Image (cartoon, rainbow, N blue to C red; front, side, top):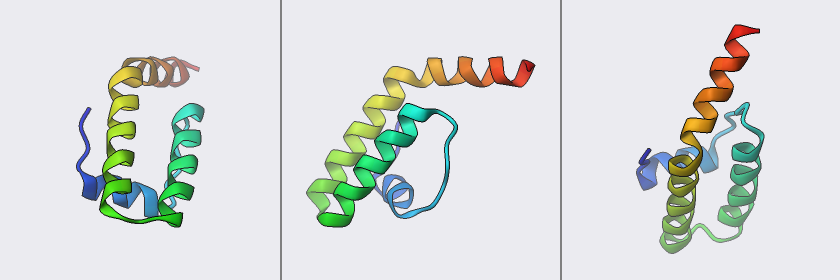
Length: 71
């Protein structure tokens, strides 16, 4: 899954909540980093890290959602 820098910036500045704990923890860490330094290079690094996480764990997150939907 690929997100643009603008989409990532909305995530970092927004108040959305996510069920996947590790994704929520990643966002909290990156939000704190981005709040300290909101330069384009930090945003670029955050975008790469979020996209890498989603690429790696997208299937696991879908599976978790499917399992929870059956409860």
